[in-house]
Image 1 (cartoon, helix red, strand yellow):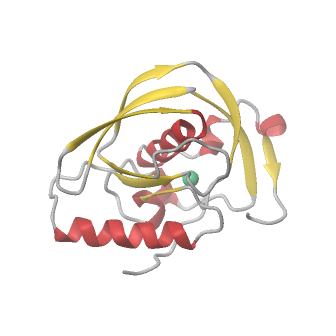
Image 2: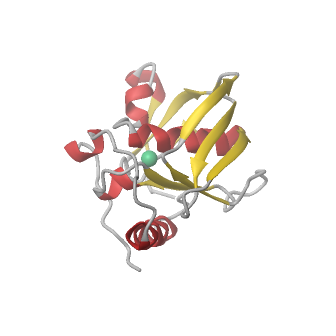
Image 3: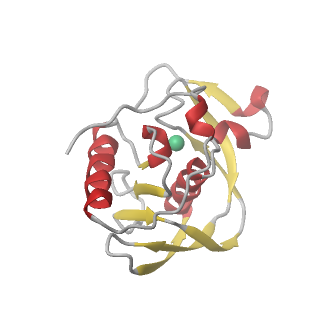
Length: 166
Ligand SMILES: [Zn+2]
Protein backbone atom coordinates (compact mmCIF):
# COMPACT_ATOMS: atom_id res chain seq x y z
CA UNK A 1 0.00 0.00 0.00
CA UNK A 2 1.28 3.42 -0.88
CA UNK A 3 0.29 7.00 -1.51
CA UNK A 4 1.05 7.78 -5.16
CA UNK A 5 2.09 11.08 -6.69
CA UNK A 6 -0.80 12.99 -8.26
CA UNK A 7 -0.19 14.61 -11.64
CA UNK A 8 -1.12 18.27 -11.84
CA UNK A 9 -2.45 20.26 -14.84
CA UNK A 10 -0.99 20.92 -17.43
CA UNK A 11 0.81 17.54 -17.25
CA UNK A 12 0.33 15.95 -20.70
CA UNK A 13 -0.31 12.52 -19.18
CA UNK A 14 -3.67 13.81 -17.92
CA UNK A 15 -4.77 13.90 -21.58
CA UNK A 16 -4.16 10.20 -22.15
CA UNK A 17 -7.20 8.10 -23.00
CA UNK A 18 -7.03 5.12 -20.66
CA UNK A 19 -7.19 1.56 -21.96
CA UNK A 20 -9.53 -1.16 -20.63
CA UNK A 21 -8.46 -3.48 -17.82
CA UNK A 22 -8.08 -7.03 -19.10
CA UNK A 23 -6.49 -8.88 -16.19
CA UNK A 24 -8.41 -9.06 -12.93
CA UNK A 25 -5.38 -10.17 -10.98
CA UNK A 26 -3.26 -9.45 -7.92
CA UNK A 27 -1.57 -6.51 -9.64
CA UNK A 28 -4.97 -4.87 -10.20
CA UNK A 29 -5.96 -5.39 -6.55
CA UNK A 30 -2.66 -3.89 -5.35
CA UNK A 31 -3.04 -0.88 -7.62
CA UNK A 32 -6.64 -0.23 -6.51
CA UNK A 33 -5.46 -0.34 -2.86
CA UNK A 34 -2.77 2.26 -3.64
CA UNK A 35 -5.24 4.42 -5.56
CA UNK A 36 -7.63 4.33 -2.61
CA UNK A 37 -4.84 5.22 -0.14
CA UNK A 38 -3.95 8.15 -2.38
CA UNK A 39 -7.57 9.30 -2.60
CA UNK A 40 -8.02 9.07 1.18
CA UNK A 41 -4.85 11.13 1.70
CA UNK A 42 -6.38 14.11 -0.13
CA UNK A 43 -8.32 16.73 1.80
CA UNK A 44 -12.05 16.11 1.20
CA UNK A 45 -11.23 14.11 -1.92
CA UNK A 46 -14.28 12.26 -3.29
CA UNK A 47 -12.73 10.54 -6.28
CA UNK A 48 -9.51 9.70 -8.06
CA UNK A 49 -8.73 8.19 -11.46
CA UNK A 50 -5.76 6.04 -12.46
CA UNK A 51 -4.75 8.57 -15.14
CA UNK A 52 -4.18 11.11 -12.34
CA UNK A 53 -1.39 8.96 -10.94
CA UNK A 54 0.12 8.13 -14.34
CA UNK A 55 -1.47 4.71 -14.80
CA UNK A 56 -3.22 4.56 -18.20
CA UNK A 57 -5.88 1.95 -17.30
CA UNK A 58 -9.64 2.48 -17.00
CA UNK A 59 -9.78 2.47 -13.20
CA UNK A 60 -11.13 5.04 -10.74
CA UNK A 61 -12.66 5.23 -7.26
CA UNK A 62 -15.51 7.45 -6.08
CA UNK A 63 -16.67 7.86 -2.49
CA UNK A 64 -18.84 10.87 -1.66
CA UNK A 65 -19.89 9.55 1.76
CA UNK A 66 -17.48 11.97 3.50
CA UNK A 67 -19.72 14.85 2.38
CA UNK A 68 -22.50 15.61 4.85
CA UNK A 69 -26.20 15.30 3.91
CA UNK A 70 -25.65 13.42 0.68
CA UNK A 71 -27.17 10.09 -0.22
CA UNK A 72 -24.49 7.73 -1.42
CA UNK A 73 -23.47 4.15 -2.11
CA UNK A 74 -20.19 4.57 -0.19
CA UNK A 75 -17.13 3.51 -2.12
CA UNK A 76 -17.77 2.79 -5.80
CA UNK A 77 -15.01 1.08 -7.73
CA UNK A 78 -14.91 2.00 -11.40
CA UNK A 79 -13.22 -0.58 -13.62
CA UNK A 80 -13.98 -0.25 -17.34
CA UNK A 81 -16.97 1.94 -16.40
CA UNK A 82 -19.68 2.84 -18.91
CA UNK A 83 -22.57 5.24 -18.47
CA UNK A 84 -25.53 3.64 -20.23
CA UNK A 85 -28.25 6.21 -19.46
CA UNK A 86 -28.34 9.92 -18.69
CA UNK A 87 -31.20 12.04 -17.34
CA UNK A 88 -31.53 15.77 -16.76
CA UNK A 89 -28.91 18.52 -16.68
CA UNK A 90 -27.64 20.47 -13.73
CA UNK A 91 -24.84 22.99 -13.12
CA UNK A 92 -22.57 22.38 -10.14
CA UNK A 93 -19.20 23.43 -8.74
CA UNK A 94 -16.32 20.96 -9.16
CA UNK A 95 -12.78 20.73 -7.90
CA UNK A 96 -10.00 18.30 -8.76
CA UNK A 97 -6.77 17.11 -7.12
CA UNK A 98 -5.06 17.68 -10.48
CA UNK A 99 -6.28 21.31 -10.67
CA UNK A 100 -5.53 22.39 -7.09
CA UNK A 101 -5.84 26.17 -7.58
CA UNK A 102 -9.30 26.38 -9.17
CA UNK A 103 -12.90 25.24 -9.00
CA UNK A 104 -15.36 25.49 -11.87
CA UNK A 105 -19.04 25.35 -12.77
CA UNK A 106 -19.78 22.35 -14.95
CA UNK A 107 -23.02 21.03 -16.50
CA UNK A 108 -23.57 17.32 -15.82
CA UNK A 109 -26.40 14.83 -16.11
CA UNK A 110 -28.52 14.83 -12.97
CA UNK A 111 -28.84 11.06 -12.83
CA UNK A 112 -27.06 8.23 -14.62
CA UNK A 113 -27.03 4.47 -14.95
CA UNK A 114 -23.53 3.09 -14.52
CA UNK A 115 -22.12 -0.27 -15.55
CA UNK A 116 -18.79 -1.15 -14.00
CA UNK A 117 -16.78 -4.18 -12.89
CA UNK A 118 -15.52 -5.25 -9.49
CA UNK A 119 -12.10 -6.68 -8.64
CA UNK A 120 -13.15 -10.20 -9.58
CA UNK A 121 -14.40 -9.09 -13.00
CA UNK A 122 -18.09 -9.23 -12.13
CA UNK A 123 -20.38 -6.63 -13.70
CA UNK A 124 -22.11 -4.19 -11.32
CA UNK A 125 -25.01 -1.86 -12.05
CA UNK A 126 -25.68 1.42 -10.25
CA UNK A 127 -28.37 4.02 -10.52
CA UNK A 128 -26.80 7.30 -9.30
CA UNK A 129 -28.02 10.84 -8.86
CA UNK A 130 -26.94 14.28 -7.70
CA UNK A 131 -23.42 14.83 -6.41
CA UNK A 132 -22.54 11.13 -6.59
CA UNK A 133 -23.55 10.97 -10.28
CA UNK A 134 -21.50 14.15 -10.86
CA UNK A 135 -18.41 12.64 -9.20
CA UNK A 136 -18.63 9.52 -11.38
CA UNK A 137 -18.98 11.61 -14.57
CA UNK A 138 -15.94 13.67 -13.48
CA UNK A 139 -13.82 10.52 -12.94
CA UNK A 140 -14.86 8.90 -16.23
CA UNK A 141 -13.84 12.15 -17.97
CA UNK A 142 -10.34 11.63 -16.52
CA UNK A 143 -10.25 8.17 -18.13
CA UNK A 144 -11.10 9.85 -21.45
CA UNK A 145 -8.28 12.36 -21.03
CA UNK A 146 -10.54 15.25 -20.02
CA UNK A 147 -10.52 17.66 -17.08
CA UNK A 148 -13.40 19.77 -15.77
CA UNK A 149 -11.55 22.72 -17.36
CA UNK A 150 -12.43 21.25 -20.76
CA UNK A 151 -16.15 21.40 -19.94
CA UNK A 152 -16.46 25.00 -18.78
CA UNK A 153 -18.86 26.99 -20.91
CA UNK A 154 -16.78 30.12 -20.25
CA UNK A 155 -13.42 30.33 -18.50
CA UNK A 156 -14.16 33.94 -17.64
CA UNK A 157 -17.48 33.27 -15.89
CA UNK A 158 -17.20 29.69 -14.69
CA UNK A 159 -13.66 29.38 -13.33
CA UNK A 160 -12.84 30.39 -9.76
CA UNK A 161 -9.46 30.65 -8.05
CA UNK A 162 -9.37 29.09 -4.60
CA UNK A 163 -7.28 30.16 -1.65
CA UNK A 164 -6.97 26.79 0.08
CA UNK A 165 -7.67 23.31 -1.18
CA UNK A 166 -10.30 21.87 1.11
ZN1 LIG B 1 -10.48 15.25 -11.02
